[in-house]
Length: 89
Image 1 (cartoon, rainbow, N blue to C red):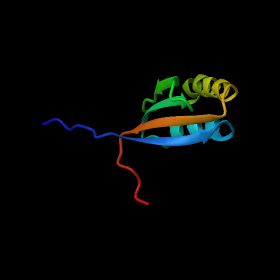
Image 2 (image 1 turned 30 degrees about the vertical axis):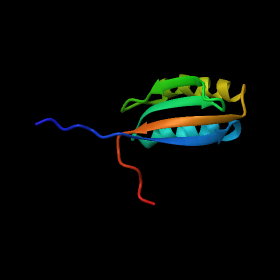
Image 3 (image 1 turned 180 degrees about the horizontal axis):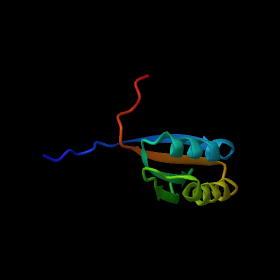
Image 4 (image 1 turned 60 degrees about the vertical axis):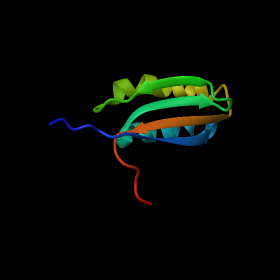
C-alpha cells in the first residue's frame, strides 16, 4: 500500500523589507516543499524547491537571490507549497 502526501498552498503578500526574513523563516520550518516569488503584477521572479535537509551551503545562494530581487521591487506575492496540513489557529 502506498501512502500519498497531501499538499496545500498559501499565498503571502510581502514587502521588500520583510521578504528575505520571511523566506528564511519558511526554509527553516521544514514543512515547505516549494517557494515561488512573484512581483505585484503576478510575474514569477524566482522559483525554487526546498528539499528535506537543506542546510547552510544550499540556503545561502537562495537567500542571495531573494535579497537581489528585494532590491528591484517593493511588493511581492510568495506562493508556498507545504506537505503538512495548515496550522490550526
